[in-house]
Image 1 (tube, rainbow, N blue to C red):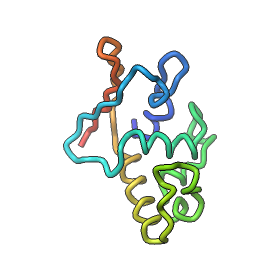
Image 2 (tube, rainbow, N blue to C red; image 1 turned 30 degrees about the vertical axis):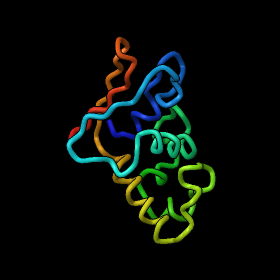
Image 3 (cartoon, one colour; image 1 turned 90 degrees about the horizontal axis):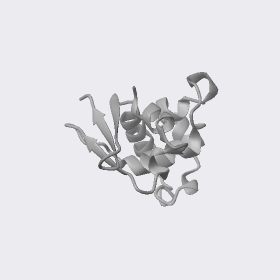
Image 4 (cartoon, rainbow, N blue to C red; image 1 turned 180 degrees about the vertical axis):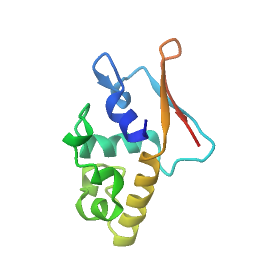
Length: 121
């Protein structure tokens, strides 16, 4: 699955990955992400409906940097609120698309209370 799918569809006790207080998110990857899984989750949480099928969401928010740059409310997230310059918005958008479209397997380790994002690089 792609990272944006893992962040919107994997749940524990009806809570999404970043909302489970006693679980941490770990990553196993060769090529680093541009942004932390937490920032990516909060971005996804603002633009896609949780648990929705592909046809129920505007996937341009995960596939089209120009659309993101023009339509995402950067002030809606404290981590992106400082991005105001057009070039910075476009850099953010290109990097978000690159991160969210990476292929990943999600392992839920209940013993260690971890969500393991294992990237196929």
